[in-house]
Length: 499
Image (cartoon, rainbow, N blue to C red; front, side, top):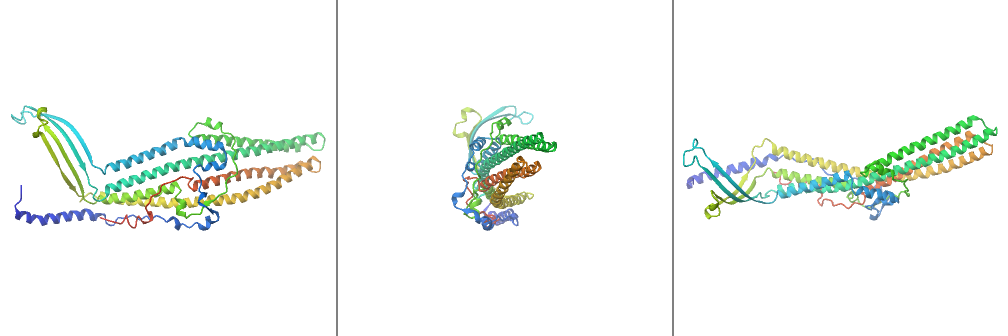
């Protein structure tokens, strides 16, 4: 029905005011909601004094195959085999594919869709419902359609959802690289533990050989009437103690081999073929002379956390766009007829379409809660990012300071060991010459064993510090970081265009 001109003039202001009120009602409800998290500036986390003594050139970043610096081909082969595929890496790669597919779904939602359909429908209305000519007869309809649907991204919500999903996919890709770095570092650390266990076994066997020599000498002296059975029993105790320590070291070797095999995604039999490590000296620790922001840009966990902050920021934009009116365009063209003979005639043409506008007015608080959740997601992502920054700098500082301290401890321990070796040799010589007692030899032998074990443990810790530093510096990975300055997100993007 067409309204007369006076009626249209009367209703037009009322309809305009109603439309404005609806827009205001829908848009004003998001006010007062905003995220609280603030990303830290990496360069504001001062580390110059702690790391300055180690700074060198940019060439100091570790290579992607950083473990080759340890100089053990067997370790190189173990890590290469593990990186070829393990359950943990397969899971990380599956998460990447999952995130990429989710980003593809978000991208598809931004685009128009076109579909075709064919349908046949028939109905028979009973005469008890409708008399003839409608009732009592069966009628069928053939329908061929071509449909078009498109929702213009007027407020950027579709694009924001796609960018959020893309950021999550990029974070998953970086985390897959982080999984490889973690796996290689874990294998290298376990390999160092295996080297320490072999070194402990070598120490125990050397001690066992020394104790047996002392036992043989004691028996000779008892036979010659120079000593009594007490000296032999003391020597036998030393032999048994060294044998027990060798057995304990073998147990550690077996357990570490099993651990390495499990890290490689293999059964324990794979560990049986791992020979004693032949590690060279751990490389001298050094870091690049760059700012903290660039230093941490090589860390996969930090870069992944940055991508998640970026994704969460776009999630807020998408939630805000939900408060605005949405426009949907749809069209359908087709052919409909009661029989195939008339289906392709001009009279069978079917056309339907037009725009549809919708605006949320009362939704029970759904949109506000969705925006509040997006704000909280952003705050959580920022907190994770900030914690990653702090933890990354601590990892670097710990590894460097540990390496420096361990180097000094090794020098001191080696001096002590050299002195203990001289003391033991002197005591043994005096005992063989009848100038000393077996107690003197045992007393001199005890610190020598302890120092050998201590040096083996310190060397293992020194290797571990070198491995940890390579991991803390990003393991030589080349990562793509977000281009935006996340420290400005909450000040510009997240507070802009608040509905």
